[in-house]
Image (cartoon, rainbow, N blue to C red; front, side, top):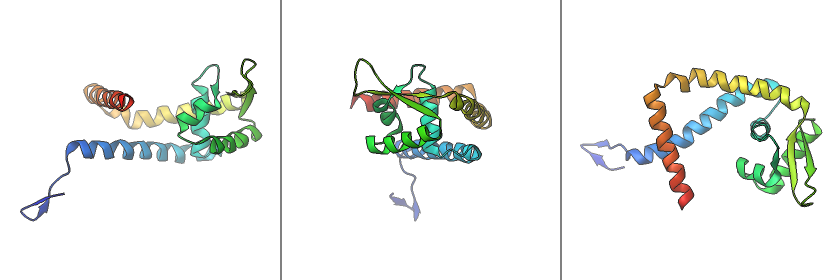
Length: 152
């Protein structure tokens, strides 16, 4: 940062925006983590369950690893834990024996309702405090940025 008249200048708005994206994402997950801790699920577990719940026919392990941003061995350990706890099951695709699909068990469907309720509560306390104009502008900026990143 440069200095004028002995005081540091603010970084460019684009730099602050980029940092804010990461900060908000971490803060959001941390708040949810605290709220979901009583369920006995770590952040990686509840996030994996949530992603799988959003895919009606399940997700392949490859898809889930990409969504979670983890490598295959890390995902395998996580899925082993979730499977041992009765939250998910893995089935090999008949059309491709190398592809394993992850789906929720009935036990997990109940906990998904509690996860969704906590997410909805956090939205009410935060996102719904934004005006429609603020939310639309923020969403438009994030969507444009996502498109630019995808194009790289």
